[in-house]
Image (tube, rainbow, N blue to C red; front, top):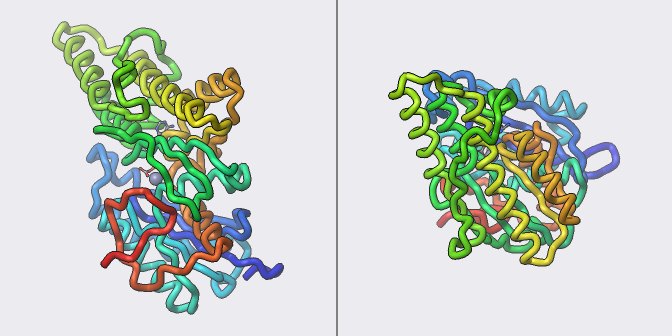
Amino acid sequence: MTSSGSPSVLGVESSCDETGFGLVSDGVLLGQGLASSAAQHADFGGVVPEIAARAHLEAVVPTLRIAVEDAGIQLSDISHVAVTSGPGLATAVHVGLAAAKSIAWSLGKPLYGVHHLAGHAAADTLEHGPLPERSIVLIVSGGHTSVLAVGDLVRDPIEHLGDTLDDAAGEAFDKVSRLLGLGYPGGPAISRAALEGDPTTFSFPRAMLRPKDAPFTFSFSGLKTAVARTVETLERAGEPVPVADIAASFEQAVVDVLVKKALRAVKERNLDTLIIVGGVAANARLRAVAQEKCAAAGIELRIPPPALCTDNGAMIAAVGDLLVRSGAAPSGLRIAADPSAVLHGAQLPLLR
Ligand code: KG4
Ligand code: ZN
């Protein structure tokens, strides 16, 4: 508990290559600690699950210590523990789950297993306050791309209007970055290269935008292939590969589709708020284009600050804090990892 008697919820995140701990009380971020093993995966062009798991194991105690110190509290002040129990890399989720169970058990506090993607949505509440009664949430991360209709994040079922048929938006950034030789993680690398490029140089495909296509469904694998073909053709002809122009044109193609479909969902549902979350929401071009289009359409746009878009422990603490305040029953120490959990609700059910 804080000195005012409010709960202090610890959030634990380890689903991919970030080890995160955050402390949230009554919707306010008290402090956090974050460690990343991204550099250790760079040579492999993507996250290596065993390396990520070992890095989490090394990082949990020091990162927890940083979070507790940052929040200016004692471990014994923690009133509840929330942890990503899925989806994510199984080996990586297990480490955070084991850590969270140890903390909850040793402190004698309740444990909540939460859905990682609900955490991404909850991150926005730390910056912009409670979600409106109903909103459209566009989740764009390394593993997921979804348009969701969301009410009360922890009480109401979450409705999927559309998902990706193949690659997630972040995955497309990572794959295209690899083929342009820009390294991992791809999003920030493409974004940096794109700053020097002209987004109109190459007209890459914008998939699933024809009238007969599912209105909120995405596909990014054709775009990735189109970039690969362009690079191959240039190389075969002995011509230089204009990396910055390709990066900018690719980024623009992804952003165009994301923004178009998200706005379409807001209008179709007669809503007035769009929330964009997940690692790709840190992308400057996406933020700028969404801002411009939402302003023109009279739609309120909410995007967490970039550091709260990519994985962190604060977002998991934010879900835990919402669950606690809504009176949800804890998951208990039996909660198991569910690496491929689909997002139906903020709290993950116990597996049978
Ligand atoms: O949400 P996140 O941190 O982890 C998952 O839940 O997957 O998202 C990671 C993804 C990666 O694919 C990364 O390349 C992408 O987010 N990303 C970006 C940017 N920063 C991270 N994509 C585009 N632009 C960025 N600035
Ligand atoms: Zn994530």
